[in-house]
Amino acid sequence: MAASAKTLTHEKPNPAEDWTIVLPRRGKQRRNLLKTRIPQQAHSWVPIDQKVDPDRESKLMQKMVVCMKKLESSEFFCNFMDQIRTPQISDHISRVLGSETKMQMVIYGIGSLELYEPPRVQLGLAILTKKRFSWIGDVEVFDPILSGTETRVLETLGCSVLSVNEQGRRQASKPTLFYMPHCEAELYDNLLHANWRVDLLNRIILFGNSFEGYEQYVSVFKNSAGVSLRKHLLAVRRFTEEFGIKMVSDDYYRALNDMSWHFFSIDPDMELQFGKMMEIVDSCSETA
Image (cartoon, rainbow, N blue to C red; front, side, top):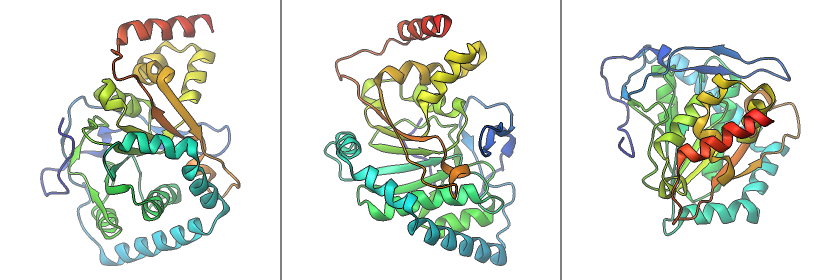
């Protein structure tokens, strides 16, 4: 797959049913899932709802402005910025950047900005982070449920909306921050599968659901189906340094709970042998 996709063009629409969509809920309640088949190939996409309504666009833009102002003045955001500046995180960022001065940000699975507040919080955090740190370059966004109005608002906010449903299979030909809050495990696994080489994984920063949490889930429930959907995610854990973010209030719990920074530090001379790594994972899940 090409390292980047074109911005939005008017081609034949693709149904939103092609993705698994997650709307996280509070506490220990189960997430609401709209479970559908994930296709194996990337294909062109435009919104099913292509109509751009100026009134809807204005209202959504105002919601985003209010959301970002509230977020920027919060204790949570202050702690989030401070964590990125710590040597633990900043040293990893410098390593991933290498000789580059910027890395692109790719946002997958952001959800409906018009219908739900959590996606607005997640997007607002991404935009504010780019605003604070010069090492973040272009921002590309994709979710198959985005409308034409939402696409226009994203572009106004400085983002590009992809015209290709990559299914998470973007190869990191250059340093890339994948911003994927509350995506399905299959989407993370698609990303890792597409980048299953030492040089590619070392170019990736992933902000999303805790991989440690997935590993604990598999070890507790010994779910063979769960393992099959998370093979690369589980196999890469031994090379992953994970830093969970700190939640200081309930304000952003639904949008950002259980989120972590993930960095993959692998010896360039090492050869990733997936079969042997999965034997170790399977053995651990059976004996846990």
